[in-house]
Length: 110
Image (cartoon, rainbow, N blue to C red; front, top):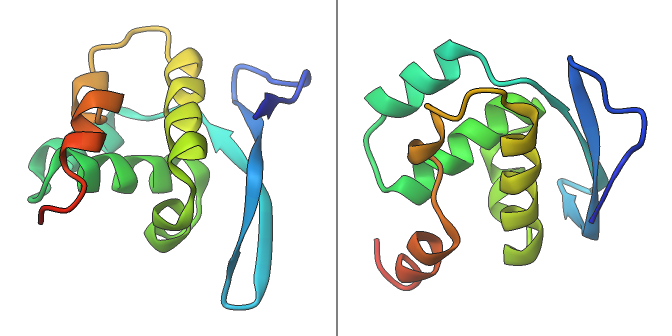
């Protein structure tokens, strides 16, 4: 994972360690924007596990479908999460995103 040096206050580019192919389209990087409060509110009101909420929130800030986020390797998912956190000046919304420990505890359970 590398962050593009041209990161701005509006967002940044996130390069994946391993690209994913969704519907025949190869995705090797994601363009990020700063999370908005509406993303926090939607995540807080959503039903499901913290992992599912995190997938939905990362989908919102990257502008890709949740299935793209779900297709990421765990290493890329966790690095993307940290990269988004770095874009946020105030981290009050971050508890809705799964931590590495919470993410791995949810594997194998629905």
